[in-house]
Length: 385
Image (tube, rainbow, N blue to C red; front, side):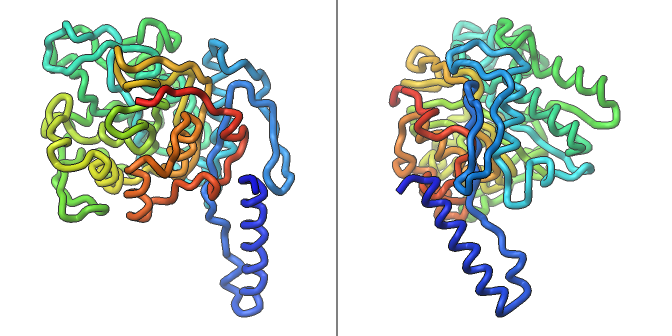
């Protein structure tokens, strides 16, 4: 039985159960289908339908998955993924209030313009395509949040183990100011924040380097016996959205929205490249521990390029062109779909099993409602690390 038929039977069973309960109590009328939804949108997406036959439109300007995409084409993919990657409470726009503080956590593990030869306190690796979050995806997400009146403060926050902010290093560039050799249309995070601030003065836009943010020491809800230094930005924000590329990783198999949480551990306490984290115990447990401090309210994974092979760095890592966006409110489900698309078996990714035991959702793709393209359509060859 394929996934859509299975989910159709699941939904039908839920409806039947709800009908039976209504005879016993009026409360049952509020029963919701909690099946996690994950959007899969390739640049070639031309439309599709749900298991119940409901049709939805495709992209207005579909492109081959090997095409070089414009910012407008990526924006359309991000918005379509958010449209399809709904939550039990509705769309992403429905779950974030106008007065909330929203933190967007990209993955910026490398910095264009810095390499191993640069000695400024960071642990530099050569930048290659797919190593970091596509800035155009972040730009589209922020534009969506602004248009839907989501958030009074929108912060881009990262704590890379690879580079230091300019004011703390000898280098003229950092992950906030580099323009990535023009790869993302000349965007930098600093430029992005400045432009949004000018256009929307009623909203606070800012950047927080989590390596040097104020911290609190606290136990991890997923593992109370272990405590971590956590940036106050992560502890205090109302909403957190993890945005990252698809990557392989020699330590964990894959690196996606949950692995992105390694970046919240401040380098001021754990060093560069945060090797002190590895001394605390298995990396898989540390990932889930950090995630449990403030689980993501939403996850967006993908872009134009990812990393295969012995990632995430050169020379072991190899760039993979895929033109794919995944989105959803269940981080484990989004990451599980990402793993399957990359050619991995989700049941073999150790931190998925730990996350499921801790109540953060399951990784069985047969129990995940995928919308848009199918996993099989999106599957690419990401060389195993």
